Length: 399
View 1 (tube, rainbow, N blue to C red):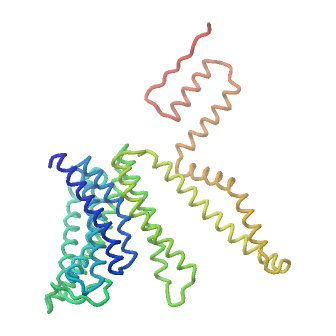
View 2 (cartoon, rainbow, N blue to C red):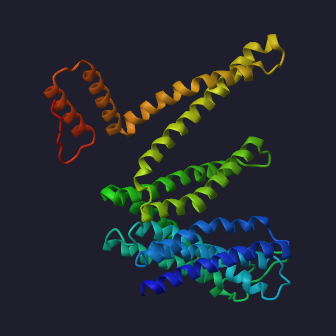
């Protein structure tokens, strides 16, 4: 494919996604569908970054995978809204298409992106086996879901039966095939995560920074996913209100990280825009996450202790809350400074050692009078902190 044809195809797919994203809220208003289906608009990140990467690097499969995910997401939400009223013309076929599109836009990018990111190539030829297993999982799930008998699992005013469902022993076998495909897909996703880990260990220089951006967002998305899984285990009939709040925050954090953060990280990594800022991003994430957890724990603990101590005197006033707020505000700066020092010492040792070296050089600079010794010290500091290939010191002579 020529570069011009690749650009035309990439931006045409982006335009198709925009049309689908614009049509979804219109269908929601006309058919009184689900307002959450307008979530397709958040997929604009996948579509735009995919079109940008595919038009500039047509040989890189990452851009085409992002466009595939975006268009499949748009079709999935449009067919969901259209099939929500079962009396609509073609609602059965819209529901049938929707029944297996979810697996396409969710699983295909999730597996193949981690296998080929960032250059669009596999880690080695042996990973082709994982690709074939992933394609087998996609085929098994799509065939099993598309031709299984019974009612389609879509939110409709009346149950919609599968128009291509095959009854009898064949239908039972197809249901089993769909389950096998999902199980195989889960196994290949684990292998895909292993591929990212191995690529990160083997990569150097620019590629390592690219993979770090991708791995950072994946790990960040894993946190709300684990929270949702833990909350789902304890949710029952009598649910605490704070658990509902935690569930909502975790869900929207996961959505934002996957639909906005992931394409942004992919665009930064592949297009190499502010690529080397990933160390700063990780550093700030560790510092402020630890700071938030520390100050939150200190605030809750102080509120409880002060309420127990002051309750006989204040009789239920908000003095404990006010004192705890002031105490946490006073702790912010020293706590942040201390946590920053601990994070630098533990995870960013080179930066920590460089800062200590510069501090020691500043102390010697105040007491050093010998120009030659000062020049040697300056060269040593530059070599230790900046690590250049060559150091030359030029001093202007006295007039």
